[in-house]
Length: 310
Length: 247
Ligand SMILES: Nc1ncnc2c1ncn2[C@@H]1O[C@H](COP(=O)(O)OP(=O)(O)OP(=O)(O)O)[C@@H](O)[C@H]1O
Ligand SMILES: [Mg+2]
Image (tube, rainbow over all chains, first blue to last red; front, side, top):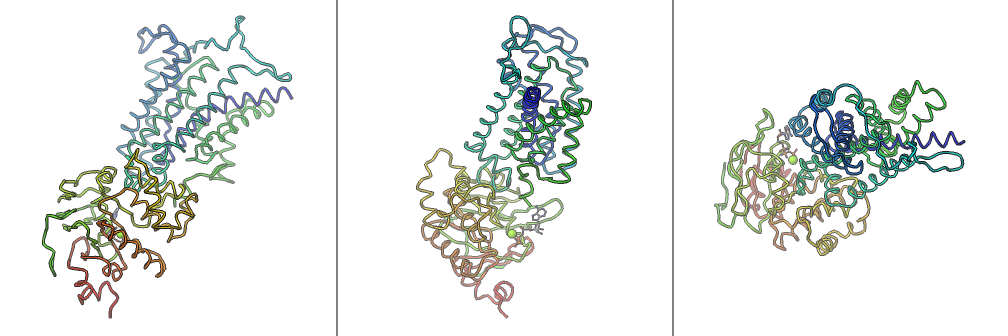
């Protein structure tokens, strides 16, 4: 029972990270029907830039560079802002010129972007793991993680933090999309770009905002991933990116609450699956879910918004 | 271009379209379209399917960009002004096929109509729209996609009016509606015009449209082939044969 609770919590934490990356996939897909494979890499950059902001110095392109040595809580927002800028640049350079091209062209551009970013990261940070410093606030003096005990299960402060931050981010995002003027413009553009333009919506700007949000969420996930696993690596975004994409499909691509639900569901299934079935198949569970989903409920748990468009 | 009746240029013109050419890839959709709308008029644009009526409206709105020619509105050149900016100048289009946002409530659809007027109090606008289309008041919290065709048309018109335009462009407002509703829609168009709105109307239902409009243009494969007062067009044998269903 306690083991189960422990695994559920691990699943929630992992699922939170998937959910945050899935937001980008689902929002961008919802508006331009493009799977921006580069979100996995933006997640990776989120982790690296967080490290850079937290350390005093670090090798970039083989040169030792001085950094401010900020607290995690300051480092991650900076990483989010930088990565948001990268996301907008990617849209401008790789996707906007292809807006009216066949969809396959943009998809290939996305895969190219993803590979390019991985290579850039390798050139900048090297190809081996870079240590992600301990974030301090959830570690007790003896170096062990702080935790609370519920019945006999240990819940770490970090687990609570990651889930709480994710839930808060999702609530803010939901408020933004449902209640603000820009959010309304985003929903309108996702349903009909020409008609939104007739109403006065600057569709390219709305798309840029979507990339800002998606990229920042990915970077947030990257920072928290680093805090949990204590490393960053240029190829670290590939598998989480793929799983987040599956989470987005699972929740119903284009559907923001669906991305949250899909991420959490995937994280929990993966945790329980590797705990009770086999940890060697950890990565396989996601793909089994994807296959089952595509066979039995291709519109996802909460229903994709795309099907209504036809 | 055959000129029938009096349609000489006047300085009261709110909109002047001057010899625009529009291409979709290799398709030459508009081959030199010119037209003029004076303040306070209802002008009807009729023509067969594919003649270029919607393309003309979309050029004016800024959704498509003419390769050559010019569009002047209210004394300024708007040829290359994009759609999200023309609406702030007072041009509003209710597009063909209504194009309601299906997953937004009726109220939110109307709010989108007023998107270009950010920060303004919309209370009176909602009241006016709901008075014009009482059914929208009843349905205000229902998703747009669940409305009937007629209700969606009213919503599309209401939404276009929420922009408080100076020129309202309606692309086939009677499409797919029962005769009773068609009559109702046209009554409302006339009512809006009586309150001072300038209207450019694209219609397949040429008879009714010409009944309520002041002047009309006839389009064929990308050009204007005829323009005259609506009464003159109604009694023109060619027009009667091609668009009014006369034997
Ligand atoms: N997006 C587009 N891409 C390519 N061709 C287009 C596009 N839109 C319109 N066309 C072509 O341009 C021509 C004019 O089309 P348009 O929609 O303006 O006609 P219309 O007079 O509004 O017709 P309808 O009465 O059927 O609405 C047609 O030949 C059409 O096939
Ligand atoms: Mg048309």
